[in-house]
Image (cartoon, rainbow, N blue to C red; front, side, top):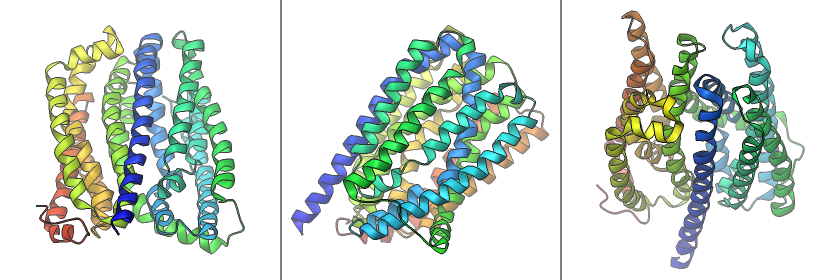
Length: 425
C-alpha cells in the first residue's frame, strides 16, 4: 500500500512539475511577446487583441462544455480500459465538432452585425478558427492519464513558434491580423500531432459510437458547463463591455494589458489545481491541500502588496510608457488577484472529492448574478466605466471565494474521509 501511494504521489509531483515547466515557459514567452506587442501595436490595436481574446473565452468554454472536468474524471477512473477510452475520446470529439459549428455560426453573425467589430471581420474570423482548433485538442485525455509531458511539450513548441513569427513579421499597428494567423497554424499542427500520438502511444483512436453515448457524455458535462460558462461571463465580459463604451480608444488596451497580469497569476495557479484534480478524485489527500496553501499564500500576499505600491511603475515597465494609466486598473484588480489561487484550489480539487460538486458549480452562477447586479447598479447610477467594472470584478471574485470557503467549512467533517487526512481544521 505504501509503495502504491508513493507511486501516485510521485506521478502527481511529476505532472505538477511538467505543468509548471509549461507555465514558466509560457510566461517567459509572454514576457517577451506581450511587451513587444503593446509597444509595436500601440494601445488601440492591442485593445483589439484583448477584445478578440475575451470573445474567444466564450468560444473555448462552449466548445469544451465542461469536458475538461467531466471527461478528465472518467479517464482517471477508466485509465486501463482502452475500449472505453476510445469511445470517450470519439464521443467527446464529435460533441466538440458540433459545438464548434454552432458557436461559429453565432459568432460570425454577431461580428457582421456589430458596428464595433465588422470592420475587422477577417481578424475576428481568424481568431475564431484558431480557437476552434485549440478546442479540439484532447487535453482531457492526458490530464486523466496524468501524463502532462505531451501537453507541456506541445504548448511550449506552439507558443515558441508563434512568438518567433511575431518577432519576425509583426512590426507596426497594421500587422495585428498576423497574430491569429500564427496561432491558427500552430493549433492546426498540434491537433494533427496529438491525435496521431494518442493512437500510437496509448492505442486510443476514433471508433464507431452510438449517438446515445455522445449525448450521455454531453449530459454528464453540462453540470460543469453551467459553472464554467458563468465564470467566463463575469470574468471575460468586461473587455467586451469596454469595446462598446470606449470603442477605438486606448482604454481598452490599458485594460487588456492590466488583465494580462491577472492571467499571469491564473496561469501560475492552474498547474497545481489541474494536476491535483485527478489525483484528489482518487486519493482525497486533503492534508496535502493544506500544506500547499500554507506555502503559496504568503508569497501571493507579498506580491499583491508590492503591486499595490508600484502599480503604475509595473505597468510602464511591462507594457511601455503609454500604459501608465493602466496602473489604477491593476490596483483595482488586486483583490481579484489575491483570491485566484485559493479559489482554484477550493473548487474542483477539494469540493468535488468532498462530494460538493454542485456547490462548486453553483458558485460561479452566484458570481454571475452578483456581477450582473453590480453592473446594472452602475448603469442605473450613470457610473459604469472601466474603474467601476474592475471594482465589480474584484468584489465578485472575492464573494465567489467566500462562497466556496463557506461550504468547505460547513462540511469540514468530510475532510477526514481520505486515507491521509486528520485534524485539518
